[in-house]
Image (cartoon, rainbow, N blue to C red):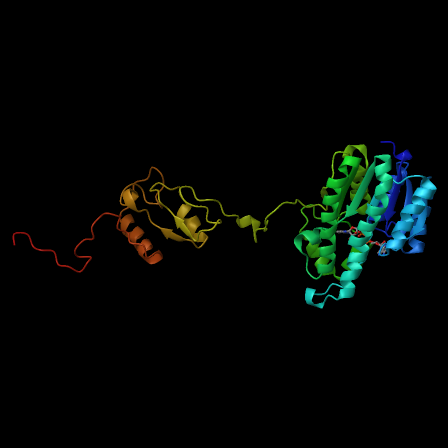
Length: 366
Ligand SMILES: NC(=O)c1ccc[n+]([C@@H]2O[C@H](COP(=O)([O-])OP(=O)(O)OC[C@H]3O[C@@H](n4cnc5c(N)ncnc54)[C@H](O)[C@@H]3O)[C@@H](O)[C@H]2O)c1
């Protein structure tokens, strides 16, 4: 795609986060960019940055939480540039991090207005133009917080998951007009993130430790290219997708880190893997490898001795392969069995010896 023919609107492009980076990257490719920003000085700053390297940018004062502003932003873009090809819904207003029961209506309204409603209004506003030109690239911003249900940000989480729903629905309905709609869930040390990290240094450090790549993303290095890809011909066959650009693997289920990875337990051969579910290592084969029992005990598993045909013959679990069974090994094994488990040592089907039952055996000849 020749970006020099394209016009892009990027909301919240005045901050020091993803919006500004995306606006600059698109402008570098030759795109004409509308820097939509609520803070005029910041919006002007980004536009000036772009002019510096010879790019084409125009600042538009927009509060995305107001429908009138959003519609005006799109109408003015079409009036001055003649078209709108790329829409990046990056803006988001934030609220205090407090528990769900303390969130107020105003907080929820702010999150929704600047996030879900803003995205919805701007998408509706650009649609007729994109449909008419049979081309459109819409990139929305969501968050891993919404997916995981992060603490103390229920309004934000609900907003971001709403945006993902909106993204999928629009992708289905508007694909026929060659409009792709995708969402990026970033992880970037933006202005907003840095402000939070300064206030909560321990939490920020702990959060960064959970990232397999062990660093927070850099908006410039890690995010700009992602948006560019979705806007380009290379991303033309991707729609309704959430692209997590945050240095983590994503999937369903829990991936809990081991407390001490150096003490990783290995599955027992001839038994069950102790780290799975059971607290009992069932050593059912007479020839179990050396160390199995020790390993099971190390993991505080109850060791059940061999039963059935395996009991009473072959090597003991503690005996090395090729070694003769030591004397008294059966007695020891029984002792371990009695101590460790209430299960009888008698193999099934073998009658209990009368003495064990407390019955005196009848003497022969009587
Ligand atoms: N940075 C991250 O790690 C991260 C993680 C998950 C999701 N996100 C999402 O990615 C997007 C970009 O995040 P960021 O951290 O780069 O941005 P940021 O937090 O640094 O900046 C947010 C921007 O939104 C603008 N804004 C706020 N209210 C506005 C309004 N009513 N009208 C217009 N602009 C308004 C602010 O002026 C600011 O420039 C946001 O939607 C954010 O929720 C970011």
